[in-house]
Structure formats: structure tokens, C-alpha cells
Length: 226
Ligand SMILES: Cc1ncc(COP(=O)(O)O)c(C=O)c1O
Image 1 (tube, rainbow, N blue to C red):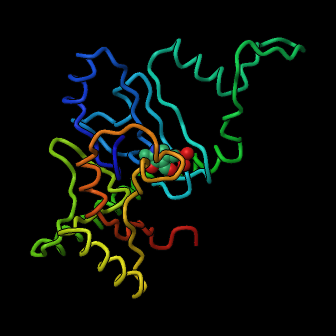
Image 2: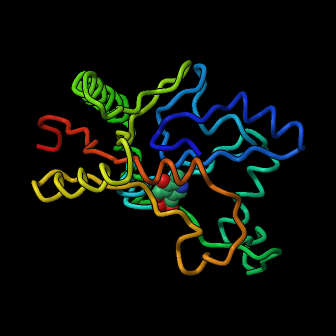
């Protein structure tokens, strides 16, 4: 998963996956327009997925896209996501359990219009991130920047507080004063339906949950749509 649009350390990850013979599937829901060593995220693994949910860099209102370079696998993915219907002039036969996960024509049309704005949105998002970087330069709060050899879309800008107390104070202060900030996701094992699931110590996840705050990240295109 390329969190907040920042590419994950794919080379290191690939080594581990090769060692244990595990396939790579990239959750690139947040990272359209982000590149790892010059190659687009979501194109390294057997599959990559993009999200076009309303909160993403571009949207179709909902839905997303599967990226796949293997023709056979891509065909199978399409089959399963379009009800697994066997092509036939009139019969309705399904040869597997399938799902109706199509992007509707109207949503796809919206996506076509949105994708025309992608380069511009990415430019604005990177400009905003640059401003934040400058702003937080001398602050004790660390602004999260793109990893080495990567180009990020800066989907969600993030800062890292000193500790949980500072995180909570900042969330309280900003939200009370009309600036929308958010903590990151609650850890899954802290949700009631998963609280009995096995975990390891999750020390890094806990460290991040205690400190990371997302700050306003919208790229507003001046005059767009007028
Ligand atoms: C990392 C990640 N994976 C998956 C999803 C789910 O995507 P969707 O809302 O398109 O189902 C999201 C966000 O919505 C996400 O941020």
C-alpha cells in the first residue's frame, strides 16, 4: 500500500516477497500519479488497484480500476468482476462465483473528464506540499516528504507530532478553529470486530497512530468548472 500517495519501498519489499515466494499486489488506491524510480505505482505487482472514490486525486464518484499486465490474469479479473457470465448469444450461464463490480458508463465518462485534469491537479498538489515543507522547515513538527527516488502525488499531506498528547492537542486546536485535520486510521485490531484477531506487537503502527496528523490537502483549480 502506497500510503498517502507516497510509494512504499518496493525494492526491499520485492526481496522479501521473492524469498518467501509471495505475489505482490499493490494497493495503489491513494497513489495515482506517484512514481517509484520513474515507474508508476500499481504497475510493479501482479495486480495494482486504483480508487476513484470521492476523496481521491481524481474521482468517478466511486469505484476504481484494476491494473494488470498479464493477459490471462486480466481476463480472469474482468470475468469475475462482471458476474462471471459465459459469453453466449442468449443464455445466462455463469461458470464461477462472480461480482457486479463494473464502473458504470456514466461514472467512466466522468473519469475520462477527470483524467484530463490529472496533470494539473498533481502540479497543484506538489506546489501545496512544497509550501507546507517550507512552512514546517523550522518547526518541531515534521512534514512528511516523498521518499528517495520517488515522485509522490501528495494525496494527503501529513505531519508527525512529538507524541500522542501533542497530536491530540493539535487535532483539538485546529478542528476548533476551522482547520480540518485528522488522525490516521484506527488500528484494525482495536476495532470491536477484530479485537480478538492475532497480531504482532505492531510497534511501528502504534508509533504512527500516536503521532501522524493529516492536514488540508485539496488542490483547487482556480476557475475550473466556471
Ligand atoms: C489504501 C486504500 N485502499 C483501499 C481504499 C478503498 O478504496 P475504495 O473507496 O475505492 O473502495 C482506500 C480508500 O478509499 C484506500 O485509501
